[in-house]
Image (cartoon, rainbow, N blue to C red; front, side, top):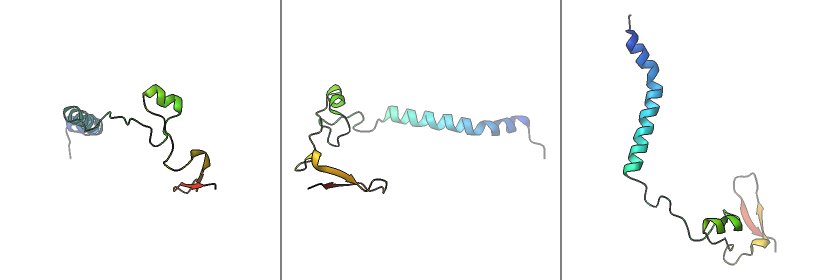
Length: 90
């Protein structure tokens, strides 16, 4: 069977072209219809993500710990199990 060279070249171009087309489609849709709440920031660092210095630089209140739990009295158990738990040392 004889396939024209242009069709063979187009076949080799399919993967990069598909990647570019899908990227541009994704970008255009997100630019036209941005996700709600995009860029929203909590007023407080609820999960202790940042150090106190980082939180102050970002304008976020530093984490004060969990209600009723002293952060100095907690330990992480079950490391490496995929399910860390907080338990009190008391």
